[in-house]
Length: 73
View (cartoon, helix red, strand yellow):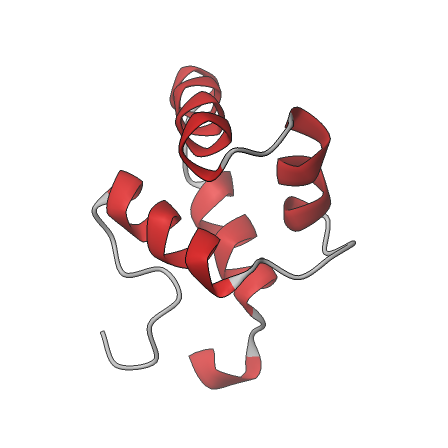
C-alpha cells in the first residue's frame, strides 16, 4: 500500500476507524478543544468535505502521539 496516494483526510479517517467508540469520543473532544473548532468541523475532515489545515494536522499528531500525516514515518 503506497501511502503517498492518500490525502491527509484519508489518513486521518484510517486512523479514526482503528479507534473504539470511547477513544473516538475522547479524541474528538481533545481535537475540538486544542484546535478551537466545533463538532461538525471534525466530521467534515473525516468525510473529506474540507481539507485539514496544517496547524490542525500538527495538533492531531501531538494529541495522538502518532505520525499520521507525515510522509516519512
